[in-house]
Amino acid sequence: MTIAQMVESMAGKAGALHGHAQDSTPFQFSEENTATDYFGHQLRKAGYNYFGNEPLYSGITGKEFAADIFMGVVHYQRLRHMVNDKFQVRTTGPVNSLHGQPVKGRAKGGGIRVGEMERDSLIAHGAAFLLQDRLMNCSDAQRAWLCRCCGSFLSTQATVTATSAGKAAAAVAVAAASAAAGQDDQKQQKQRAGAGGVGSLVRCRRCAREAVFEDSRAVVWEDGNGRRYVGGDDVTVVAVPGVLKYLDVELAAMGIRMKFLVDN
Image 1 (tube, rainbow, N blue to C red):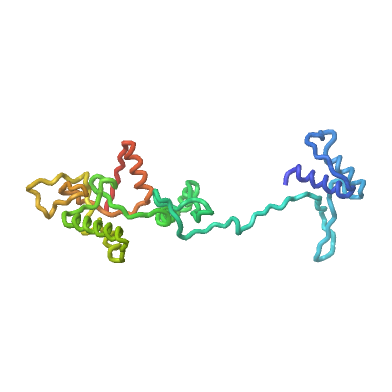
Image 2: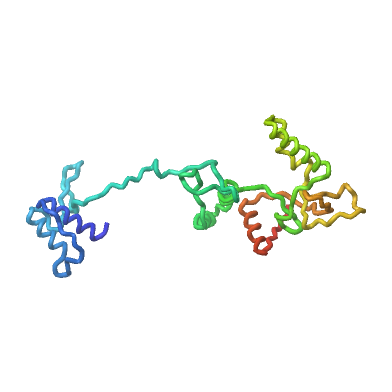
């Protein structure tokens, strides 16, 4: 409570006792003519304490308290803040299609942001593993292929062989024909869903070299455009936040290359 609220309490009490409105124009009092004196005289005329104090009595013993209690009349406007309008909870829900993090906003069923200050607080309390849970596991955790040699997410890709490419093309053709005829059973849906991943491996195209005639067919792999490569098989799967891959792509577009060192 500020001094202005205490003066307002005296003004409201005096106005209620005398039945008239009080003038609340600012800067109308001075050091010589204070607001306490102005409203104190009105309270004294009504038979009340000059400073707005009241004697109170104990509800248990019935005895008067040793100290007077300052009491007054103040107008309050009720604020309609209800818990039902403000609570926010989320287990799973909509995520951003760009990087996989939960969307923001209570109306959209989004999550509550754990920002830099919350991160600093958790680190100060020694709860570093909770950060991994909040910022990755419960946010946008993904399993991604990473090349150990060049340390890049962007150069890894799924390989195709001539056999798998032919199966994929056939599956796509059958699915297109059935869709045109209005027939789409469950088996054809599975064929269309798995058209690109029949017997595929993951290799790093940046670390691989183009295949030559002398290379064994057992070590040769193809990309989706018919080019044949050898090597680039030193890849592994890591769990990373999805937004990290998005950052890697953004920096690569500006000519900045990120390299990740992994031990597994």
